[in-house]
Image 1 (spheres, one colour):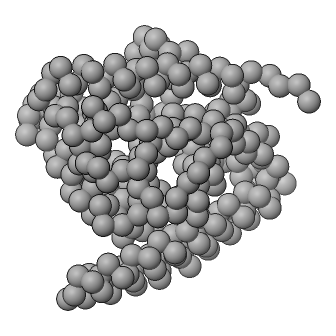
Image 2 (cartoon, rainbow, N blue to C red; image 1 turned 90 degrees about the vertical axis):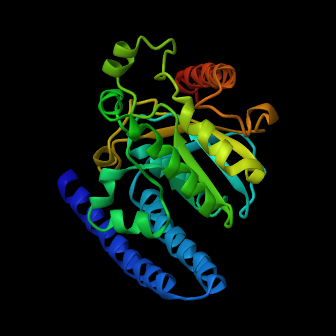
Image 3 (cartoon, rainbow, N blue to C red; image 1 turned 60 degrees about the vertical axis):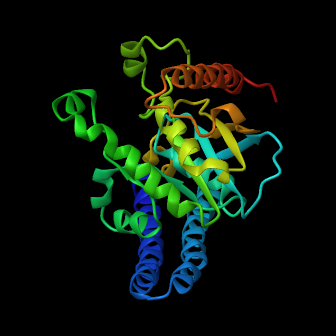
Amino acid sequence: MALIRVALLSLLIITSTVLHVIPIMAVTLVKLVLPITRLKVACNPLLTGLAESWIGVNNWVWDSFTRTRLTLEGELELLRDGHYLVLANHQSWVDILVLQKAFNRRIPFLRFFLKRQLFWVPLLGLAWWALDFPFMGRYTPKQIAKNPALAGRDIVATRRACEKFRAIPVAIMNFVEGTRFTSDKHQRQSSPYRHLLKPKSGGVAFVLDAMGQGLHAIIDVSIAYPGGAPSLLDLLANRVPEVRAQVRQRPIPAELAGGDYQNDREFRVRFQHWMNGLWAEKDAELAQLLAPRVG
């Protein structure tokens, strides 16, 4: 029965994906050939509406066909037309669905920084490209050592993406750890945090620098799975009883916006100190979210 359930829900999600990606690509092609910038910009709300409808169907599947409860803690006054940087810990692909369920149509459409290889995922890669998701190389230290020119490519890609985002309401999502949490990675890093990997501050600093005063606030999300980090298959198979998330809206420290993270060592140390403090708070929040609850 579980196999049949997963197959039927997967078919439903794939059908919705196809029905949304086709018009998204059609609007994108029209946008590319339009000669007037104002008309190109006018296509953006239509693309966003299609994307939010797509996510809305996924959320309906979650609500209608699983027993998974999403408990959100924290009161926020959110703007549909705001400009946010969303930061979260990362344990599973389910994290993305959690964030979309929590914020769809409450803040601007969430855009993620994606590995360049994900462009080739059938249908999804083209949809992410059409919706202006930034694709990053995420080169390893070994690759950069062999070819130092690679070090600046992701910075350039970040700036190019942020230039586009200045003109539209946007929520830029960043998984600060850079990869999914596992016990093995945690041990190899000798992470000082119980529930987190070490934060990678560079991406956050580059977004704050590139967006300048264009961001309203940081939305800080701590995601916890009391039953253990699930897979997408676990969610579809109805094996995830509860997801808990703490949401906080944080001001952007004025002294951290517009600094030169790459070349100014003093600024980099100050930024990392701020990021480490935020991460220590998140680690404590996760401990509370994961604690057994009565009733």
